[in-house]
Amino acid sequence: MKATPFNLAEKVALITGSGRGIGLAIARALAAAGCAVAIQDIELEIAQAEAKKINNDAGRAIALGGDINDLALAPQLIRQTVDQLGGAHILVNNASIQATMPWTKVDREDFDRTMRANVLFPIMVCQQFEPIFRRQKWGRILNIGSIQQKYGNEHMLSYAMSKAALENLTLALARDLAPHTTVNCLAPGYYNTCRNTKALGTQEGRDRAGEKMPLKRVGEPQDAAGIALTLCSDAGSYITGQTIYVDGGMSAKWW
Image (tube, helix red, strand yellow):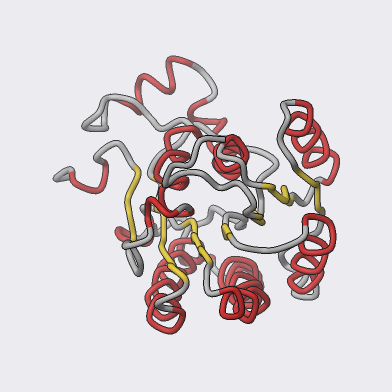
């Protein structure tokens, strides 16, 4: 592969929640740049199918399962990634859970479950990667946030708060892991993924939602892949501690 700032040959990435949606688009982009990828998903069969496609396309991928509400999964993922792919250079904290309810109905169970999966689990995975990154003096952490971390959402209060916490984690780790590792947050807007099938499952629904966006369309998973590749490669070596909204201008619009 031609040497470019985007070349990830000899690099290894773990992307959580990457059996579908934005996580899968990022995994495919990294693999196309020469990176070996560990595709993790709660549904192992889905991860296995996507890893097989990458391997059949001359890439290198493995499939990992597990539920991010199980904190014991964090050391297992790094161990499996290193054992099977030979290293660890890039971590994409993409997996998260989301529940919709009025904020007046939020209870301890919902809040604790969301914060454990969306905040505590990423922290614990970062802890597993930290000594490796320090030892090899090169690393990339990309946290996947949400536009809701900026605006909040009274119908997804726990989720929006968890993504705001993830942005704060990004700032803290960017300072602590510099200069050898960059840490950034990619915050998508309204995307055509399985979470939004009810509203965006038809072209009519996508067109209706897209009319509210400055770029006049909702996002597709691949729309997040380009900036993710930049932030995970040497092309983004001077970017750290940043939240980048990839939202079709949604965060810039005066509502």
